[in-house]
Length: 151
Image (cartoon, rainbow, N blue to C red; front, side, top):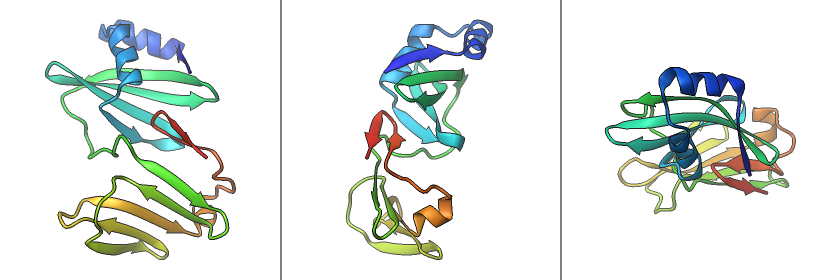
């Protein structure tokens, strides 16, 4: 994959005095990954006392850097770095694995949306039945999470 810095991101790097090498290191080896709107991702990596937050969007074989800035700590609890997604077209079921573990409890978040939790209440699996209807996405054949393309 090729990393492309948008004009906006270059301006922000200069204004915020952020070293481009830190951005590249964050993209190549993020400690934390958060999915945001329209398939954008927030990548975090700790340098010293702060985290560098890099917002990217993957377009075909390129990674577009949209913006970057320092944060004291990530705002939200982030998704697991090694998250996996699978889709069963016949069942129209999307399964998201945050991390593998023993399911202690299943919570019905909404009709046909189930969240499996471990004994500490941490999310393990999210199941969405009727995924194409709920998301408006007709083809889950190509889903990218982190650095992985899930087919």
